[in-house]
Image (cartoon, rainbow, N blue to C red; front, side, top):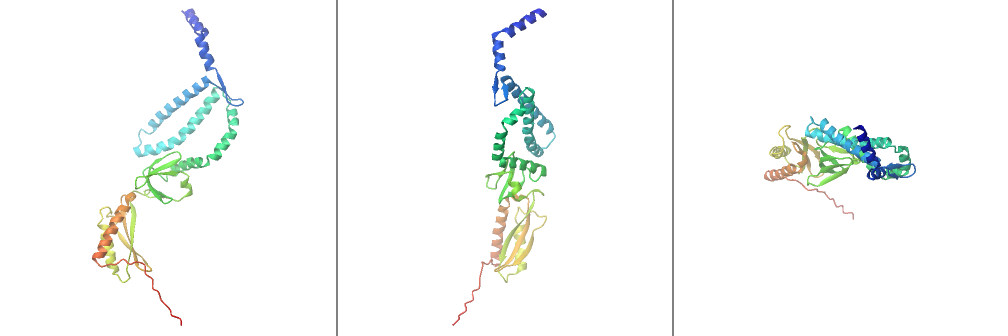
Length: 292
């Protein structure tokens, strides 16, 4: 039986099909000076990358099995950054294992890497900034942020950019490096409720106590304003043409704050008209001196 198996093995080895396949797998591709890789090496690298992908996916499911959906999203972003680093390490180790000269690879691609590095400085800044965002925990998916005068709800934090949706349902794509160059306002880091305000000026001589009462009524009567803490009125300034007031109130959804603020302004205008409280326009006194 043993002799029969040896004969079969010898016949397979000596067959033309086996020789053709062996020659094909052993066919080397020369990439620059000192770098040579065979078809078999390419197949081995592809298999290793495939196995690594499967293992990483299984590991992600295992590590996030007990996390909430919100935390799964946060962990997935961090995981995405380090996945590519793992791929790079596995690739280099595999190439070295199959006999590819890694030193020659780096030497041959040094000039190219320098050129690419200079061309992709902004890309690297975005990636590093994205890592800082997650480590610093300054922004999460679902947060309402304001940066460079633009406001949006964060939908996705990716490797290079953060995607947010504005109030008018437009997608705001923010390069991550802008977080390092601009002041970032996170409206919801302290919670979903925010303190908002509406400013208004009334004519000099108006009953300020009546104005305070009407402003509180306008804010309290709006269904979007939270009862606790209660709305309050601040007398902000003696302006050039008006007495300036600000009514401050709390909203549960600051992302859509402009709508309840608009409703409150409508109510203020109606109440002021009903109680004969006038909102002045800018005025200037002109003195004409006649010099003979």
